[in-house]
Image 1 (cartoon, rainbow, N blue to C red):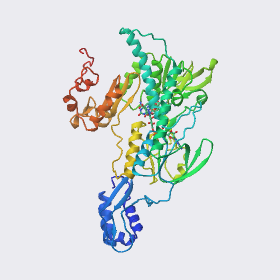
Image 2 (image 1 turned 60 degrees about the vertical axis):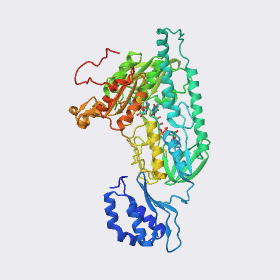
Image 3 (image 1 turned 90 degrees about the vertical axis):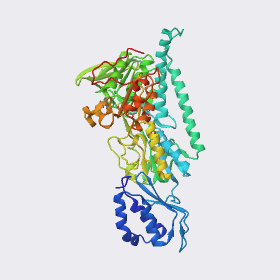
Image 4 (image 1 turned 90 degrees about the horizontal axis):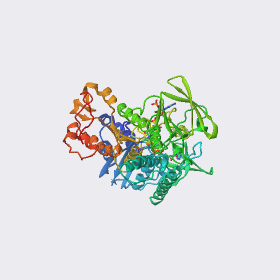
Length: 562
Ligand code: FAD
Ligand code: NDP
């Protein structure tokens, strides 16, 4: 009944009563019918809190404000004056879990476990409200020994190095184009070591920047691995094995994930993952990318662009969950530009071959066993959340034992004072801006009297393959399944005034193009809004203002004019 799922207002009110000494039992029996009615109606706590307290103890309140953090109900009473008795209230608050906001006796108001996209954003927002905050961040080395600094996956082994290498790959193509267009460019191959150095130097500067920011903002940075020993205590173990225990009023779990291995012979010993590729000492040489989603295709794309002999091994379809017309187009483009693709195949064994090479045995089309030799094998077959060694059982937090992911409602786990943001959440997008926004909004709900929940709908994303693929909302397949094929045209919903429910763009700089349209779609843009917009000529993006040819019409969409 409560807009924030669990109705804890009753508990919250009880705690207010206990705190200020009101006879909660008497108050409850007198007001229960009204409380129940209000719960069913899902109405605000103002009526619930203010009137009974006024009635019972002759308080005078300027305001009683409800505030929801996830599903925790927090009641804040401002400027109270006690007519009889001692208590003088200026501002006090209580929550549905019964622990006061201030003077709670814990070391911290908030401890965030994980200094990645979500964790840093959440802690830096929380501290703005005068809270005592700590962030833990610790990176276990990969089986190949790669390690990195503060900032999490995105900064160190994700979006940032990936985008830089994507750009370097595209530069190669630009140089060739430049020569053809008359520039006198001597294209003499690419220096892998130099690129890695430049990328790692940039990452180093970001790591340093985050450390300085935490110090300046008075957030305690603890470079140690955190593990719950009870619902309010975290054991923190640093690299030298030194252990300290810290306690906190609340926790945010933002531990992200790490690449999954295949579980076949030789995978951990011989293969690498995206955690290793961006700091690889020497050039990767002939490379196999296992997997057919974001990471595999992006890595294959920039490695091909850098001139390496690259093969993608796809178990089933490309880019599961994305529009399959667009996904096929991406794969075809990559194949046409030099990436080899083995379809419907999975590796079954990795063995050491001569000169440090890797002999890969793989099953194609279900059972045909084939072999090939590679210098490097990158596994990009999904990621698991880092929760299995987090002591979640000690804290009472429920999680999915297969993926490690944590189910949550408005980022609140089943334990009232423990929250989760980012890749660790079950059923949410694994994207940096999602983790950041969820972290910021959570901190505002916890401490800033905000009621704004995170909206996981219409999240735009881009696959940074050489020809980029940006998308927002539904794929054509999803739209047809949801609304029926007859109700869909150009991924607009005919029954809702041609509201755009899916937007897909395969083009250079698709990431930049897609971001702007995300705003329009959030505002409920229809095909008519797109048609009424004047394009910018000559751009690719202007095509969205000129769309006339539908797939159903059967007319060729190829352009002949400018
Ligand atoms: P993370 O950033 O992973 O941070 C979690 C941190 O917590 C890590 O530093 C981890 O070591 C630490 N930690 C874990 N357990 C503990 C513990 N017990 N104690 C202390 N510290 C702990 N997203 C995009 O939006 N755009 C992209 O282009 C993009 N490209 C990507 C490319 C690659 C190759 C990969 C792998 C990911 C990419 N992503 C991209 C996804 C993006 O990186 C993640 O969605 C984002 O980093 C998730 O943030 P997070 O805060 O949940 O976790
Ligand atoms: P995904 O979970 O998206 O894809 C896993 C891929 O590996 C699929 O193609 C899957 O095939 C295949 N696979 C899974 N298991 C096996 C197996 N046993 N043998 C062979 N193939 C297998 O993982 P990614 O690692 O690509 O990406 C993780 C997340 O990181 C993404 O969901 C995304 O949110 C984020 N990310 C975002 C980026 C961006 O914004 N540009 C870039 C990179 C990552 P099948 O379809 O058959 O299951």
